[in-house]
Length: 245
Ligand code: BGC
Image (cartoon, rainbow, N blue to C red):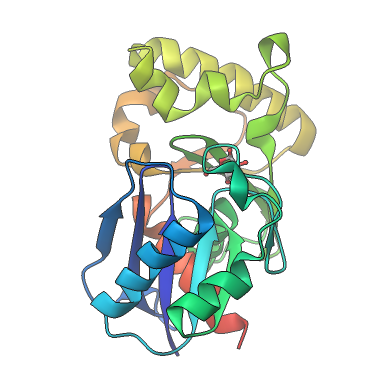
């Protein structure tokens, strides 16, 4: 089955129709930059532009950067606060004119990587992190993906760990790869103590530059970049959308 996958991020939303049997994009992805902090209603309109761009009618899956419970959004650390408590499943479905199923953006990326990418065929404990505006996380075991919020682990001074280790922090603070790698290594060590993953998959836009920072990371688990790089979120959202039918 084909489904439209849409990945809502801190600076843009991106979408493409996906063949959910193979994980392949059926058309070049469409990206809409969101420099302003969009409200849920404005986001729904932007989402409709993607639907119209592909002249889409059919199942839609959306990955959102916050805690998602059913159709409800519970947290919105890096997007508009009005998303908190919003029934985005209902709002997006109404505005898009097609059924929309929501999931967490990192859980979507993990679905794609475990089904078709870096975790394909691996049944052991896996930790996937997406490094972008924030830090997204999901765990997988025996092929089952579990969304997590490890980016909000209290870190130095009690602030969320993502405020120290996200890719956006490296850029903003102009940290060297070595310095950022050192921060990530400390963070990963704590996560390894808690979960003992056998495989760690690093996703997000920055994963395309893994050759620059992987040499600075030390982990017990095998460490690999996401195979879909930044497209895992789109593919996984589509998988989620198709599964909800
Ligand atoms: C959110 C997560 C999300 C991550 C990456 C965090 O701030 O709480 O839900 O997966 O950012 O977008």
